[in-house]
Amino acid sequence: MKKLIIFLTLTGMMGAMPVASQASPEDDLKAWRSYFKTRFPDVKFDEFSNGLYALPGAEDRRAEWEEIMEFPPYELELEEGKKFWDANKLGTCFKNGGRGIAHKYPYWNGKQVRTIELDINACLKKKGKKPIKNLKKGKMAQVVAYMKSMSRGKRVKVDLSSAGAKAAYEKGKQFYWARRGQLNFSCAHCHVDKPGQFIGGNILSAGLGHGVGFPAYRSKWGGLGTLHRRYGGCNKQVRAKPLKPQSETYRALELYETYMASDLPLTAPSQRF
Image 1 (cartoon, rainbow, N blue to C red):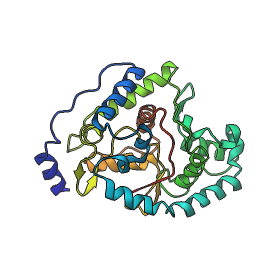
Image 2 (spheres, rainbow, N blue to C red; image 1 turned 90 degrees about the vertical axis):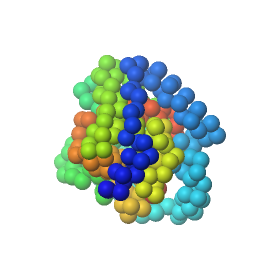
Image 3 (cartoon, rainbow, N blue to C red; image 1 turned 30 degrees about the vertical axis):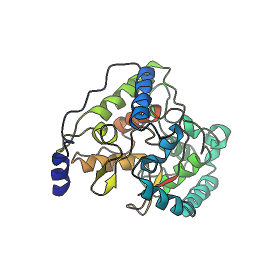
Image 4 (cartoon, rainbow, N blue to C red; image 1 turned 45 degrees about the vertical axis):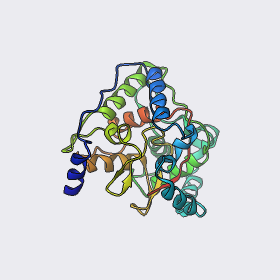
């Protein structure tokens, strides 16, 4: 980590970042897309769903990824997710049996931001069964991956029509742009200011499209992990204390990032290095 801090200092990544403007979600989205279109004019919109593999300079990583995806490493876990889903009849708790609805998550239910993870555990509790405790990997990641696989290719459509949803969106937006940790970084420092650049041998992904591929199988993890697991990892990397998965703040962040990925196709589950 000491080498990482030195590297970031030398490359100027500890400089100032513009603060997110006080604009409507619609204006935010328009500006967001325009920024990345200008930054990466040769990258087609849908390609941003593929994370760093879509970016210029990542051609070698892309070729390796395409080879890996001929036999996706998450297939066995996806099968386990389906078995758990079927055995516990989770489809009875969701509209259309859970098919074709994951692209509308997360959503505001009048009281809070609801994620697939929360609704799966609520379904289990309703059936008199124990909720899944580990919200970062294992069974939960597998089941969420299966549910999202039933909506794969559907375009993200998050509803922010209510005042509560907009307030949660603003909370997530604030977290995204706020500095934190010993590195004094925001999410935007890496994913808005420096996407496509190398850091510690890794290529930074663009903020556009974040979340649409999660749960993801990361080589570093050796298995599937949820989006909130990734959030926690990012916080640790900037030496900030990670929040608990499915905390109110992380759910607000997920709402913000998902809205900013509006109209992109879901690619979950996916593979990431």
